[in-house]
Image 1 (cartoon, rainbow, N blue to C red):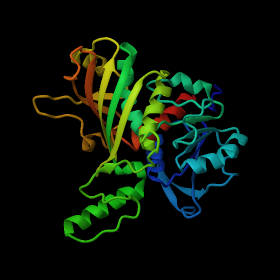
Image 2: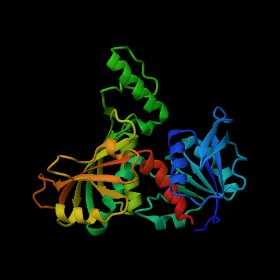
Image 3: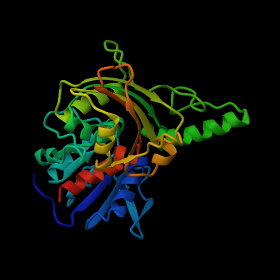
Image 4: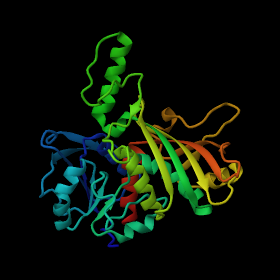
Length: 339
């Protein structure tokens, strides 16, 4: 891995979007040692300013010339934009850390969660992929368990927030909820189904052969790649719920050897990026309102799977901020690996 300058020049492409805004907050909160910051967005957003470290920085239009002098380019502008500008980033000698799905399954592109496979970043050839949000939020607590006792099978059911579809979807959820409470009609334009007080299968294309939607396919394929284990059997059902920014996931995990609740809890207590919320007496477990704006993935409801008398299976309930660990924070942590 080529280490970037001690105080690199960083560019954020898609700076005005939901994830881009959180990237700036993460860079500032974590005191990332950059020498200067370029904020890039569409022509529509060019000319506006964004606050960073007490200064108002200008937002400029994303063009092929934007990356001159840039060391690290954080991208959260959509897969088509990432593909279109990857050659310009490479020509400038910068490293692209991409939040889209454009390069995740490319065998030449490392797919990195710093708590799990930081060494993979060293294999980059100019692009490092940020995994999908639902994948990261499941993988962070599952990895320390997998290291101790290999996971053979995972059944995941996700409850995914509006933030995964961007600011527009978050605003649409707010507006739809207000309209529903006021008894007024509301027309959805971002999300394809009524969103207020409703939930539905994740709004991505369903594969006509497997009948899995794209989100489910990402969770399955990306987890195997990150863990370096193509033999893990994974089934996923991904659902969109009327929550603003934190995903929840119910995980049923089968291990090679028996795994007790006590052992799993002890392992997770020392795991980076994990916070246990498992108060049985108070019936207090991970919730999206408590995971929102938190760096850690909350883990609770750690219990034996009663359908497996062998003792090899556990159930967990997790919640993590989709905009932070599910996207912006993980990308900034990857950038930190380049130092």
